[in-house]
Image (cartoon, rainbow, N blue to C red; front, top):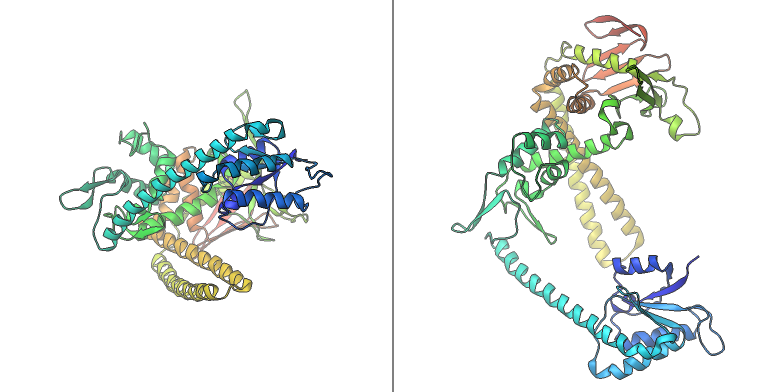
Length: 512
């Protein structure tokens, strides 16, 4: 139960959202906000009179016969609109009236509460309000001054000029030619993009930069995952100026192309989704088939369950199993059996070694051709959605109708989905091209599978596997079916005499 009720003076000023100071005060005092329907931009006396009327008509709380609130209410002030210095005495009188009917007054950044017990101190409260108004005036002046400077620079940019702005460290402003040029630090930026598209993690890239004794771009002593990430998501890397809701293409010289930048954004989103699974928190004990393995009965992802531990004797006990996630999220348990994980991983490592020898003639060409055709269709869908959204936005400006707003929201969601699919398609094309085709990815997976005890290798292996496995189904009879491009791999079981069948090979191994 709350200790008190609070009225935010902000509601009478501009109705903007609650500030951090106000939130802290409300939390510290265990208070509940009372909303009073009011017109904004009241002068201070009008605001006090409106609160007084709300007390008198009972909309704030019950009052006794003398008109005093049974439960005190606090008027919380964090900023002040204009105070007329010629009206100080009138303000002082109305504040005393407010306090006399049970409305306490407090400043958000102060512990002082002005109530009927210290009503004689109201004069100091008035002085504090005058100070708040002075602070707001100073803030407005600074904001207006900064806005004027920015507007001048914006006009220069729109006219085709390149004024000097606060810019990322990899740019240097050429005072003579009035333009930005790339400095030596841009090589580090380019390296971050190259390594990430080469399936290196942000942490691995940071370690590489530190090992190469390359200086950081800021005040940090060493490179880290965060500093690499800040580079990879910075629009300025492809030349875009993005400041104060204003964007201007080709303002900076690009370090990477726009296509490369958006390929990286798609890859970041993909890896973020992939790594969000708590199973991957520790790569050494992670599931190689995270978000890849599916249940052949219900189609849901398989998840890793159980534990792996090292005994004092040095013996490793691995009691982890792959289970259908319907057991985790649904009341109805799927009938797929559990698969002992250490056996599954041993089989996947064998399959990884077989991939390189599988047929792949012209498959890269066909795959890329299909993806490019799909990309063309997606671009068409994107253009149609953008046109529809523009039309709906025009309608909303004329007609404030809820159904149009809902339709617009739905179309924006559809557009975001199409954009994400475009990024993923571009990413897959890039992976195939950069890896030397399907055969290049197969070879890379085979090489990485030879040392999965290395964290970086393991992470890269998982990423490549997710790019190349179109299907990986675990079946009720204990078998596994894998499809990679046009290659099908059938595995009869995961323990004992295991038979792995591909189009051109049958391999018998014993897993125990």
